[in-house]
Amino acid sequence: MKSLTTTLIGLALAVLLSGNALADSHDDGKRLFVSVTGSAAQDRAMPLVLANQALDQGAEVRVLLCGAGGEIAVAELELKTLAPRGLTPRDLLNRLIQHEVTVEVCAIFLPNTDYTEDDLIDGVGIANPGDVANWMMAPGTRLFSN
Image 1: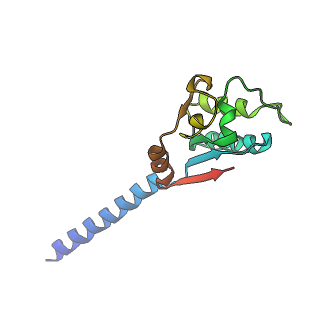
Image 2: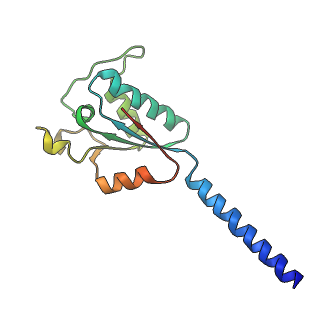
């Protein structure tokens, strides 16, 4: 009987510890979802600066560009350079794309503008709302929106 009790306690501890390990592997705060909606150059750039910093610190990053933020992905539009490094929001976005970050415009961006998918820079897709919501709600995902 004592051996059965010891075995059951051992199994219970193993289950509890493995559950904590699984929770920790999904809830480590190493996922960052960034939504860019701002119309001012600084409002567009700062979320992308933070996204790049998070990427450099090992986070999995996903970026959603909505409204005026979607214009960052429109190839024909010139964007203002910002001090101190002389970069545009698109430069910051391109670095994320080069590091295989998922970057998308909102599903309602193109239908409500005169732009088409062909107007977007390479590496930018069109968001699927269900997929985005699922990614946002996953444990360990931090959200940043501006």
